[in-house]
Image 1: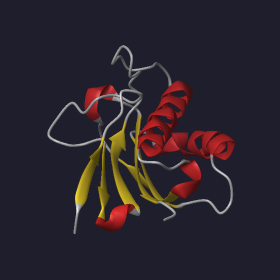
Image 2 (image 1 turned 90 degrees about the vertical axis):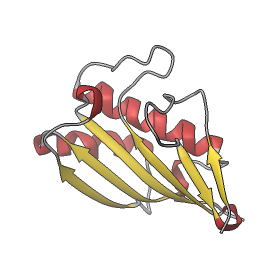
Image 3 (image 1 turned 90 degrees about the horizontal axis):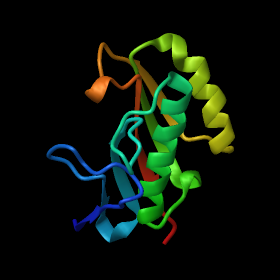
Image 4 (image 1 turned 180 degrees about the horizontal axis):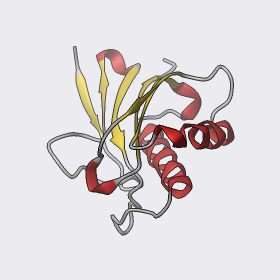
Length: 129
């Protein structure tokens, strides 16, 4: 197995002992670390659930683009919410950015997220050869 680090300045830089993403074995599968609603330019959290969901998707899109893919290449998406009452907002905003076939997805309620985030998402991407 070969591992390659994916990194872009168009998404927030890692703030811990992790990579933005790792591409493995022949380069077809990319595992993205969780993204929260940090603005990559200022590293400040955007305010409000709608803005955070939009920023999270923009951050994921930037990392996926740096790996050579796009949102249509996402096969699995995990969504972590501090309030599962915001799940309808996730569906609404995802509908603006993803098209069918939609990725497989899990939604998980959590008590807290880094930097006081309201939402975090991570993804698995499979790239065309």
